Every structure is written in C-alpha cells, then in structure tokens.
Image 1 (spheres, rainbow, N blue to C red):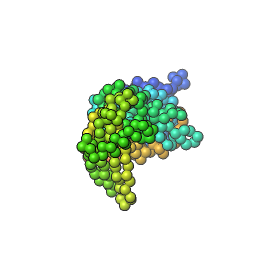
Image 2: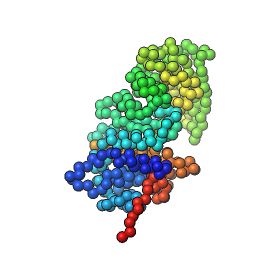
Image 3: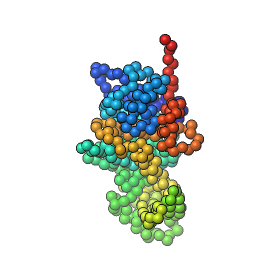
Image 4: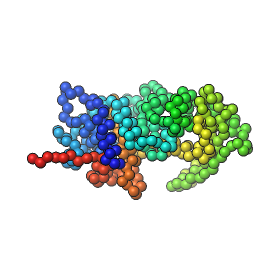
Length: 379
C-alpha cells in the first residue's frame, strides 16, 4: 500500500458527512475517529471495546499522525459514531477509494450475500449484506444491505449499478439468476455467469435435457481436473455447450453458453460428496474457462466470508443497533482491502499474521495505512 493510496483513502473519508450536530458540541474530529478505528482493526481489534482500549494505549503513536485535540475517543463515542454514520455515504466513499487504487480490473467479479449473525441477537433482525468481490485481486469492491423483508434479488441490482463492470464477467449464485439482473449486466457492458437451480424450473429443465441428449456428442467441450489441498481432494468435470436453441434469448439476453460442473469432494476419510451445478453465460466460454470462473466465484466464500468470520470475528460481534453493524462490516472490509493491496510483504504471510504484525510494528501499520507524520512545532 503506497502513501499515495493511503492519502486517497483519507481524502475519500473526508467527503463523508459528520453525523453529529455541531450545536451539541464535538470533542473529537470525525475523520480522526474513523482513522483510529481503522488502525485499531488493522491491529487485530475486532470489537468497539477493543478499538477504544487500543486507542487509549496507542495515544502517543496516534499523535504522530493526528492532532487529537481532546485526546482519544471513548468506547461510547466510537459506538455513537458508527450508529449514526450514514452507511450510504460511507459506502460511496469506499467505492470511490477502491476505484482509485484498483484501477482497471481484469477477470471476474463474484457477487454473493452473507448474514452478519451477531447483529440479530437481542430482538434485532440480523442484517444481510451482498458484496462484490474482485476474484483476481481478492478485494471487496462494494457492499449493499438487503432491505428488511426483502432478499438479495433487490440488493444485487443496486450494487451492480454502482460499479463499472464493462468487459468483466459477473458470477452470481442461483438467487441472482433473474432475467432483469442478466439484462442489467449486459446493458452495463458486462457478461454474466449465473448458476441455475429450481427457482428457474423451465430453464433448468432445458439445460438438463440438452446435456443428456448430447452426452456423447463431440459438441460437448469438457475439462477435467483434480485439486488436492490439506487433506481435501476435489475432482471436477466442467462441460459446456452452445446456448443457441436451448436458452430463450428474449429472456436471457446475449446468452451464448450453457455449462455443467460435476464435483466430487472428499475430506480425509469421509465419504465422497457429489455435486452437480448448471450455469448460463453471456460469454462464449470453454470448459476450462468455465471451471476457472466457477472456482473464482467460490473464492468469495473462502477469501471474504470465511475471513470476516474467522479473522475479523464478524459473526461474533454483538453490535446491533441502528447503522453500526453495517458500518462496522464495511470498516472491516476496508482493512481487508488495505492488507490485500499491501505490496510491502514479500513472504506471502497469512492475513491473520499480517494483522498481528501490524499490531506489533508501528512503522508497518503506518506504512500499510499510508499515514504521514505531522510537523509538530516546538514550544
């Protein structure tokens, strides 16, 4: 992460409105509060209580970069800020920063949802977030909260609308296999790869029938591969056929490929688990390209959702009120991006250890965040 990129983040954060009323008096600078929280989360702090305690312990270091006119904020101040902060504005600033530092993307964008389970305790309904994830870089491009009494079908179009997806392959699971979403993706200049399940029964039956009828046909392109990792063996056969004559282009615009992926997974001594999945795509994919894209989409589970739960303790968070769960979820994604975009580590250290290293090493933390020391005048 360069100083330039860090400065870009700080500039984007300054465009977010302070949710507090000046008439009530404000002891702490709004952007400074966000920077402190970000530095604390980078330093292996997962809760608001952790953030406040870390800030009090690291006040001298923070003063090298922040004015801290009235010292460091309390736990209650951090909590009030994240409860009141406009999540839409925070999200817009985040997307602007990511667009600046990432630049032109190659490859695919995986779109998938995750429930923040801890936010649903104490009578509150757990929030559900849909995220867009750049599979090649491993960074989050944006998130959208699913409205109450709604589902991902309504949130996905809003998230896509805010992103530049031209020439990119957008992968979505069966929930997002909707005609209007396919049309929106192609209208925005992107391509779709959508999983097909029982929520589109006529489409699913047509694809299943075509692969059965042409099972031994030379028209079927197939790609076989085996992956071995940490006691797990996954065998996969990807097959593709032209969509012409099978898929109604009036419903699924520009659809060129139908796909079938059979997977056989075995972990340790457990019995093998067989899975069969069907896909449609507006891009003319080979079987190998389909296999790569599907694996890329699964990465959002391992490299984002799992990381947020295990490394950042998101599901264990007991913050529930107002906008706090959504804003803290985005804060953790900002830090995840900072770590993934950091180019100073040549050892390919795990994300868990990178956070611990940032907690131990003041210079490393400043470098990852792109913080610039203040010029303190002598008395």
